[in-house]
Amino acid sequence: AEAAGDPQQLALARYALGNVHCALGNLDASIRHLRRCLKHYRPEMPVSLYGDSAGVGAHAFLGWAHSLRGAAAAGLREAQAAVALARG
Image 1 (cartoon, rainbow, N blue to C red):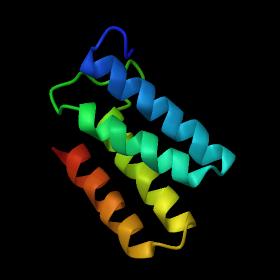
Image 2 (image 1 turned 30 degrees about the horizontal axis):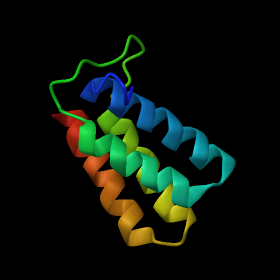
Image 3 (image 1 turned 135 degrees about the horizontal axis):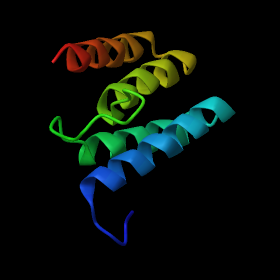
Image 4 (image 1 turned 120 degrees about the horizontal axis):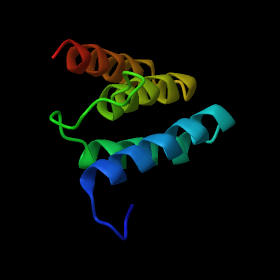
């Protein structure tokens, strides 16, 4: 994705890495990848075949990761951002 320089590919790659790191409990790495996902994400990017949006998912997983780290306020902000983006 980095070699191609395609923002959509970069967003999806960082989203996938952030999800995996979150599931493995590597919360700092998860947060780092998800933040980078959001830097590349654009609302006009298409939703995946499964109805998944990298932007909505990144905010949702950031909310989870922050909450697991004990940063409830940051987690709530990210969860609210996920809902707002999903609603459009």
